[in-house]
Length: 203
Image 1: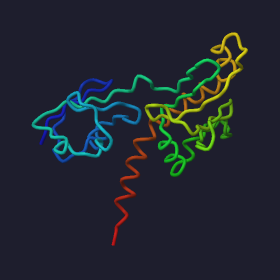
Image 2: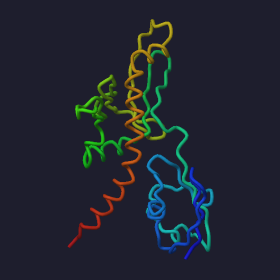
Image 3: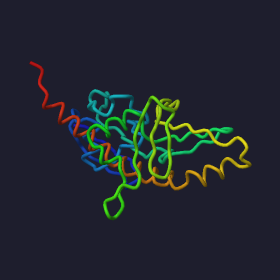
């Protein structure tokens, strides 16, 4: 057994768990939304695959501190450079593809009457596009692997920031709201994937 101190945006928690428990199972036990958060053990950020490693695999001794805090860049960003604007998502292309394949309904925002008002998609054969009806992410991920959309602005515009605000403000608000919702869905997808994979047996 190991004594784990959990640090999140909520009050600190202390739990004693089996050393064979994975980090993901520990966070889910404490209802932590880790979809768009950074997780570390004793100050060391988890690498790819680290969520599904047990505490003993992480070489945790008798005790450890697990920190899981929201990323500072939560929420899509519109980055204006010259006459171009890059819409950077909090999601990776792989995130969007996985949600599109298994839970496409999570990529559509409906109004009170159930009619779609905004949707997220991905088409890596294009630079992407965005308007008040939806955002389609394109072919060039950011340096940190996030999905992006690149659009060309009017080079004659006096203030490109104002231009983006007027042209894309509503779409950016919809996108932000949807990504906040999707952040809550991602942990469920991870759990679902593990359950599905456990049902597949190689003979």
